[in-house]
Length: 235
Length: 235
DNA sequence: CATTTGAGTGCACGGTTGTACACTGACAAT
DNA sequence: ATTGTCAGTGTACAACCGTGCACTCAAATG
Image (tube, rainbow over all chains, first blue to last red; front, top):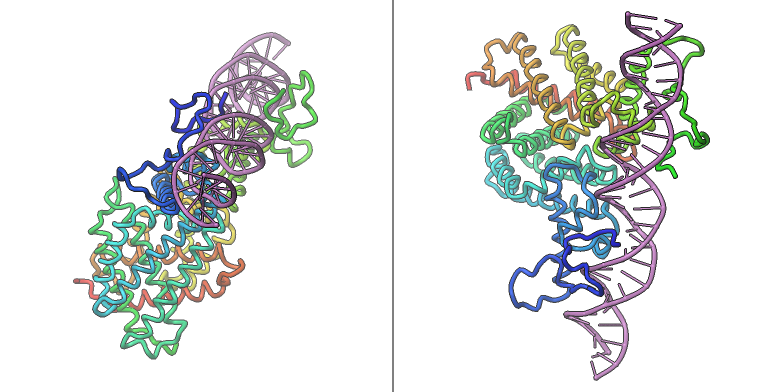
């Protein structure tokens, strides 16, 4: 008797050696769709499916078999795309970080970065359109397996140093010591990160609404800016 | 044939119905030790063992069987202490939060709370003496199962409101709006939390050392205080 | 003393997991 | 037209999981 059945309970017949088109399910009717394109499609299905499964669990809590199931393939076929679940995790980190960097770039070409409100607007929009990715990042940043945690930490450090450069170009801050700039950038980033978490939690029973979260963050950033304007850079 | 062997590979014999003293291992030689005391001891062993197992994994990643094994009992005996692993998790949250509150109380009776350095010292000492508990809290705060996440969030909110009260008693802040005070308290708490995470990660390959973490945090808090001193409370 | 209690035991179960292996068959390249 | 590639398949297995059940036997109770 078989060990598993997956999603094919009806075709357990004798020599039923299966058609390859079982996976993912063709979206449009009659296109040929190259082999590479098909592969890319199930690969994406694996990544997206993982994020979906993580709606209420951490990355460590989803199994290879589950992921394969949501992508419509058999467990062993997973290895055609990733050498291990950890590898898939690293790809998810990279993907999430790509979005984060994109966000920074968007914020950078906003009229004067010192407008905290505009930057926050961009943040909110990004979080809303990429909820799953941001949830992944916030879940795994501290809770994940060491490898993923390290990958996120590295990218975050990079993020801070990019912001440091941005700050150094602002009018009153040219005279600042690099360490001080970085310290301020770190504070801003971690505050922003707290906003992300609150946004993901927002509009849920017993948590602050989105508007409140944004309003508070705006005041917090203003408070930080105020402190910076009075800072003695020479120390 | 048996399904498991646990830690008794040699006594798989016939009627070997085991001696109860297998569990936990008696520490001192010949004390009687009441039944309740023994129970409390294995209960603690279960809690501590769980924290130990979480050195490199999240709470969701440790199994009931593993926990029981480290405590030296058979898996089914786990249920004599907790109705489920989730219940054990909630107890761990409470335990961790008790430590956090203790810390706040310590900080409160320090000469003038406005001395950020002293408060940070207390923080560092607490984190160092209760590493496992703090690691648990930081791991599960965002990454954990919903129930645990909610429990931590609730306690954190309580924490912020306690600090809000403390702030309201400081000289220059009596005229402040309650919302503004809470906003500032929230910023301080989240900054402190970031310190905790950095401390746990400190003295590990590729991360800032403890001294650097503390120095940076001190400057960040000073920057926040500076901002507060210039804040216009009327909005 | 005899009796009750309950922490801990051992076995068994049905389920899930990761992964090795040999396979198939549509597409791509020759 | 023949051949090769390789995403996907089905089977199998050993390990682990949570938990139900009937048990033991030292300590607590009377």
